[in-house]
Image (cartoon, rainbow, N blue to C red; front, side):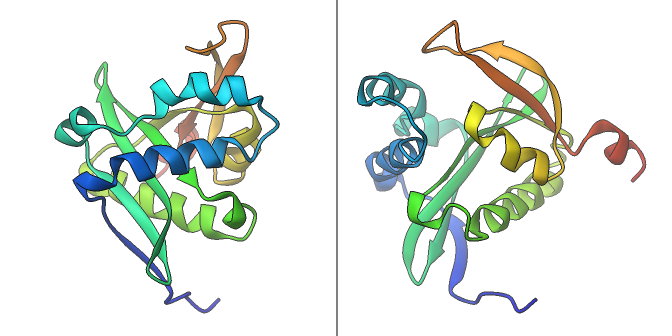
Length: 162
């Protein structure tokens, strides 16, 4: 497979917070959520100055335009893929895989393997395809009655055999 040279990764710029927040909401809007639900989600996907001060964010550009981003955080001595968002026009076109591979590389360099993901239910199939293992469910911060898949990458068995 020939590498797409039009895709580039870089650290996010501090002034991109509002744009990245909106990108996350557009990405969530790819799934059949109500406008009301998406508005409630804004509080948990906001990229603000406080976030930039604690955690690095990585932006994926295609032809010089930001089309996705990811970020990790450490909580309870575990690494979490906190943000993983892609513009809806690029979902299903292979860029999610590229973004995930980049996230894996960042986690590997930082010594953050394995890492955990609290996934959107609609994205779980993608994460399983990437090699994650489903561990169970946790309640959503927005709608407590909506279980969110809890995943680990790489799956513990494949990680332990490396």
